[in-house]
Length: 458
Ligand code: HEM
Image (cartoon, rainbow, N blue to C red; front, side, top):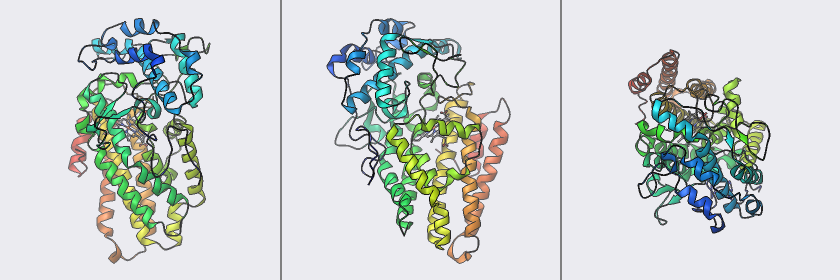
């Protein structure tokens, strides 16, 4: 069987999308000065005292004194050391470039200009390590902020967010930790997701056990996702949000990209860290066929562009399962085999993808829209129109499946109930779209509506 690995990630039914083992917590001692800087960088340090990011201009001073580790970095072979170095330089680059915006935000509530120039002593080793990993030189979700950044507090316990802490941090406050460690927590079920995806893409004769596993896994993931409300309080999202921004699409902060001194003469722009780089929903979309209903517009292009902000082995996994599913779409298989129980299982998968996206939409309203008037996401996308775009795709897939199920006798399924629930979702979406079409809309209204129609997420 084909393997999807770079020595750090290995996408299979044992590791799912998580690294092969816990990421390194610190860099090898030869990078002492860099590790020292990272340890002293958070707004609130481990001992509670303020770090460089808390004080205007401090991170710039500390960075300028850092040795250039280019020669050491280029010799590294160990995948876990490479990932930790990428993480280190990503965090430092974001801290350095975005510190002025954060300071401005503290004073005015508005994001100010970031530092355009990334000094040579960090630009050169950062670009080198990103070339070695074949990713863009900017903070990402996989190696840097999320999956490659966790530590178990108690090694004999599991990957629940309460047992996880971040190796490198920006704010150092518990809302940042809860926010990003919950993403890792949700991924504790990714081995089963990958198992179901690989089985279904292999076109086995009976897809139902894998479809059942897919639906049940997504259900567990949704239950963990909902804990976001507790893991990270929405009012505190702005304490760290600025540091995960990218430069592509964020022209207010970086009007014309960043200069990587000593590397490129022209400015470069990359997308920021975002959950849109996570693999759960894209995998579910590809396998279930929701991806075939993505509308053809600029927002879908953004989503597909974000595929390139993933490790090469994960891109290869997506490309292989996409190709296999396009030759033999799941729904076609179920229809041609008159597999009605499989169709019901597929409907459950759609339901979980819908609940994930509708709950996630409520995150966006509360954590972002209620906190700031800045309408651009950290990944550099227009926020209010993005998520409904993909909710619509799930509803279209559901509709097509209903059409195929229609001929089956009502005794076999609770048709009326399922149709009513579908209609409810359509009404909810249309009403929400109406609310957010008003320029100065009140995000609270989105919540009231969700609660009224039975989709309260917390
Ligand atoms: C407070 C929590 C969260 C907030 C505020 C949030 C915010 C956002 C925003 C603004 C986008 C638009 C794209 C962009 O960043 O440019 C997005 C997209 C996305 N996010 Fe999140 N997110 C949160 C949690 C999560 C979690 C826990 C996951 C999964 C583990 C996730 C997965 C995704 C996916 C897959 C997309 C792409 C859109 C789609 O396919 O529906 N997000 N998120």
